[in-house]
Length: 175
Image (cartoon, rainbow, N blue to C red; front, top):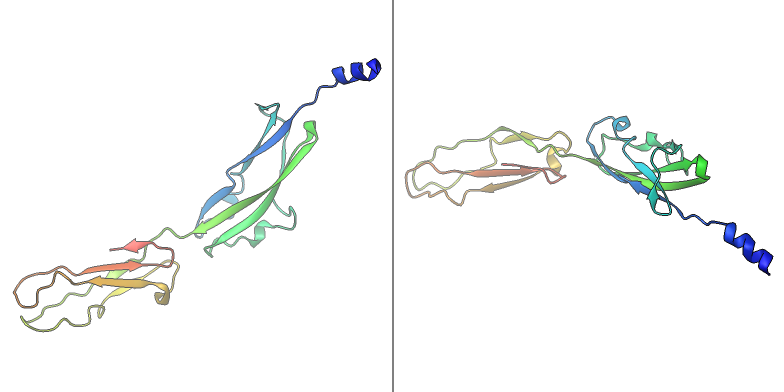
């Protein structure tokens, strides 16, 4: 019995942990995905002490049948790409799902705002007539237009603001 006890006193059990950082990456619409692939990283901890500069190998394409070629930065949505990191000196590896969120942060552009000259007492015309706008991603059908003419007083002479708000499918707003 004492022989087994003496063997176990010489065995030192280490706790090894791999922690991933930057697992959700924001990708601008139309950017090259290659600029973002190197951002995620893994760190190795042995007994809760970070090991600086260990020998590390990353696999970023083809891990568990996920491929970077499926990420289309011209389409706004979330893409999952699995990464594998291997710390060969410690004989440990880890697989992590990395989310690439392709986003459109460019608001629609108003090309032309209409202006109106009305006689006192006349009704407001169709306020969207003469309004021209476009977006870098969404079609005109997916853009919402809000028009606020509440400050216009049709019974008095004056210049009154009409506020146009144009919002694309990603929530970007132009006033």
